[in-house]
Length: 640
Image (tube, rainbow, N blue to C red):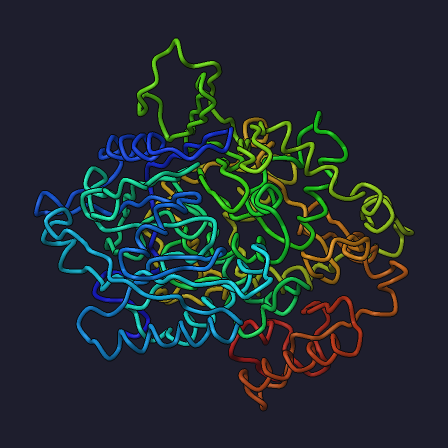
């Protein structure tokens, strides 16, 4: 099918629960030993993935190497290719069954690279050992070719990386209909090789790894466990920058927000136009997260800031957090939302090799530093051959923590050092103090908010929203009197809304999109550090433009508004003349579809005319409309 669904398989369920690790030489020395250790450690993660019915094929694994320059030049020389002093290389997956289609993918990539001012030095066929892949892995093996790309004369590495990023994304978009076309990686700093093989067979699968020139300064490795999904070559990890253990439970919202904000992402360093959508809308959640990290890095953020923005620690309820650091997180939270885990991330780009955990810390990450200045981080201890007497420091990452190796300045950055870097990037605290309106500190005359429901109006809304006696007496009464959430057990005798013979509210036709075994109230003591109801009202701006204008927002402690809070918002100086109320009632003669379209058109026109706040209200029915039904919530409206 065109959307990728087949039988019970749906791409939306692509999640991982995997093993990962990163090893780096802090002094910046490339070595064959480091690469060997990465392969050995990866092979010991076989329990982290699944094995196919043939007993050989794995869920997929891969290796990201930092600056294996001598090795890449040796591979190029074996094919008669002479790359320029500054060059990039990467594997490209192509159609193995249709040579013309494979050539079309190759030509499209070359065309986009040429359009970016880059030149292709040459291509070589990548040998693959099918015996190491197993029958199932070999049956899905793509045609793998390696491309070598030269930078333009006078181009520095940073601009070269951005040109490669844009050219590759344009080629991917042009070949979107070709499921076999996939650029594994294309960078001057890193190289990725991955396959649908067991972790102990990755080196045997690619004979290129036997070359004597193979050495690197850092390596990221990953063993995939494809939970409820079909293993695929292209979904093996690492991706271009990162490898991920866990799930992004907010992936649907994250992808939708990236699409909605696409026009806001503007950077003087790279042109994002024509690349929409900026993240993959199908495939695995890890793939989309890697896409988003690439966008932030290409736009000018480094990974120390980008990862703290994408997967921030729990900061909102921390009483002892540094004010400047809190301001950093609050500033970026105004225009971004977290990619919520559980998530453990290892990554490597042109400067940093790092590991980061989400705010819950439910994916383990243990680290050790050796006496010869190597740092290794993995999803469990005991994977590396490092005698205790050679370990000078060790530990584990806690919830929301990050550790990194600066591969240019040759130093380890612990979580505190990374926080010091982020808090000093801009005067975030000053910008927030001058720009953010905290609703609770701007109270207006409480008398303006006194407009209680009349008994008839209250009864009408209770009926309109299908409020049952049980909900009123058990749930709402407990909330109002005890300030606590009611507890109870749910039976299974209530039919789902679409099959019910009763009239049900529109929102009951929707269900939460993540698995949940029980539904207890949130524990405000155990979970207060990792939860927040804070939301904001205001213009969203460009995340790449760090300026005080981005801090001009109204912050609400909860998305649930009382009358008093709503009127406080509408009375704020910059909103009082720029808000509009749109009625949700309509004349049944025009029909529901036309009414909804008109509502959307009116809202768009108001925003284009300068409205900051558009209020959709069903409190005040239009004259002549029924008083028992909210018309844009129901398909019928009987004239009174």
